[in-house]
Image (cartoon, rainbow, N blue to C red; front, side, top):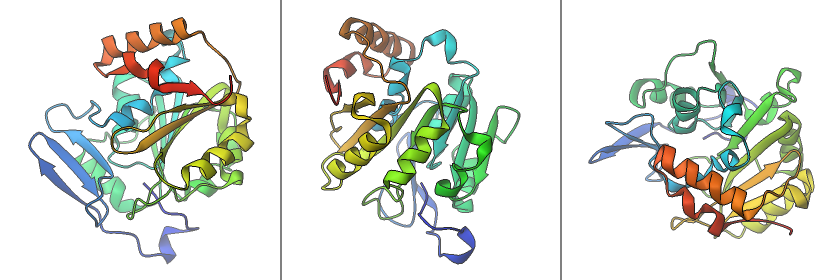
Length: 256
């Protein structure tokens, strides 16, 4: 998670702490809102359903192309997405996070590995970092989960921001964004993403029970058949144990 400011030096960042409930550890930013989670005995697996759906881009990317592809996460949270991309999918990973305390927590409490040739955490304002030339056209899977300590609405949610996100992607690259599907801001956010990417490039999941709605945007629009999506979803469920076989029933293109 991060906050929309130009620098971490001139703002008061929220306190970072954690709680535990049985076999699960949760990350908090000074409130009861859950900003991420980890199975204590399986630190590289994914517990939250909405985080699993953030990997909806796997429906479109052939499994043979995932290893070595570049995944970028905006908002580190508990490091769940970054760890999975790095450890399980064997991708090259970049994460952008504003709050140094979040990175410290991820390394100390949530088993995020240290930086190496395939993993880099950048402490920066995501809105500025993604405009740097070094990132343009390099990202195959962009996962955006930018909520502050209040968790009320995305802190980066402008048309310009989504246009910059699109410019990060390779021709076949895909962005997934966590939105609150039952929030009044959902339709506005969806409209901005559609304006940045084009309506024919947008897909969306129905909200989870908790209200998280994952929106997917393609750099190059495509329309795989329902059979192809079901086959890919079933393969994801078989490999990772997620309830992905039902994804095609709750995942639709914005335009048909």
